[in-house]
Length: 118
Image (tube, rainbow, N blue to C red):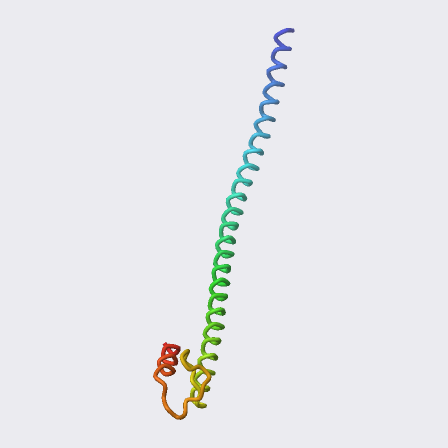
């Protein structure tokens, strides 16, 4: 009688082990899927970060180019105004600024205008 009870206990224990083993396999499969998904998400995240950095760099470069164009336009417009004043007969050099030239070329004005061209 005791042997029969002992055998039943071993059979019940074996069933519990099989059930635990099935649960463990299912858990392993779930963890494998989660690890794979985690790696995929990390790769996608890294790709998105790189893309964001590239877009930010392009934006910074575009902003710098826009500022340079504005600065060049400001310099060009100012130079054009000074050259026009000089052609109208006024000094644009620091020595005689705004005074009439009386049809003579001024070396200071010409030097100043040539520096602006460079």
